[in-house]
Amino acid sequence: MTRRTALTGIERPPGFVLHERRKGLFQRNPELVLHCEDIPLSKLAERYGTPLYVYSATAIRQRLSSFQKAFRDVPHTICYSVKANSNLSILRLLSREGCGFDVVSGGELERVLVADRRAAKKIVFSGVGKSRDEMTAALRAGILLFNIESESELWALTECATRLRTTARVALRVNPDVAADTHPYISTGLRKHKFGIPIRDARELYAKASGAKYLKVAGVSVHIGSQIVEIAPFAEAVARVADLARALRADGHRIDYIDTGGGLGISYQEPGLDFDGRTARYARAVCHPLRGMNVHLLLEPGRAIVGPAGVLLTCVVYRKQNDGKRFLVVDAAMNDLIRPSLYGAYHEIVPVVQPANSATKIETVDVVGPVCESGDFFAHDRELSRLEENDLLAILDAGAYGMSLASNYNTRPRPAEILVNGKSVKVIREREKVRDLYSAEL
Ligand SMILES: *Cc1c(COP(=O)(O)O)cnc(C)c1O
Image (cartoon, rainbow, N blue to C red):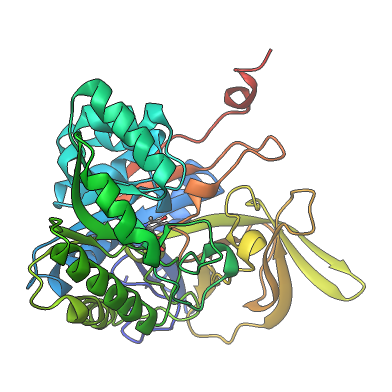
């Protein structure tokens, strides 16, 4: 088995790479097999079945470390956004690397605490509708910061904190009214969105917050959306936040933290090999408006850390042709990975095994799942080398908002999840069984 040196554009090193395989000593036509680190994906599919989520631990660590390096010159904490992928083993892996967490529900809070109880002091709690129960649980755990999104929520938190006689550190999440070019469902930084407090109204609310006995004003937060590929909107949002923070300090508030949110996009079309360059540019854009301010920076990346570190493995169940249109019906569906259906999102799809030398026949196909919705597709009119029934496909860049958005629609058990680390393979979530899906019903 030799490592292929030329990158083919479908690789996502260090996690997903092609290795050559010769079936027999004398076989002339070697095959290229997509691996997760040292493990052939074909072997994982055989052992654990499909559909199957496979993640690379090395890729996750490397991407986190890229953020850590990019921000090494400023005091900062990376608070990984749990909603991107909330598997306990992934949270544990990140926590071991010194990562903090951004949670948006009591459920996510509990996951982080189960993964690592000591992570509590590195948790920020975001979200537009935190309930009193959720805020009480977070106060009991002693989290770092509440990102508050409305006056009502501020008073609800005061009520909870007063009852527990515990001080809550708060930042207001402001809405900077900055446009970011992404899908409308995941853009959040415009006035018309439900998120945050209009930046113009923030000072007034900070004044009110500072009067509450069990609240401690500690920072300012912003998050303008997800899958933002341009860097400029981040710089613009942080510049507005920096102005506000200076005004708040002049008003006598203590602003120790600036939370710049998440949202750094990844390239779903191209592997984006220079991730370090990208995090460095992002860091410069975020840090520049804050220079000289002596604040502790909080960052909430989710997708950028886990997205390219995971694939969804699936198997061709049927080939099918309707009036000349070709379909590959695969065993994964929109319930397993909803991004194409929900956002029209593009995911690279590649055969797990392909001949290394001989030219493969290319055909144009729709890759679709078995669910009863026309929206159940992974790709329309995609050029793929000809695949037969039972062949394996890998849907790339599925590590973020894949399993965390998966559902049981059509009473389909959710896939198992596998974490690969070098030669080690760990099942980090068992495949669901159909009876798990109805066992709580009467
Ligand atoms: C979703 C979300 C994030 C993470 O966004 P990514 O695009 O995955 O980086 C960070 N912060 C908040 C408040 C979020 O809602």
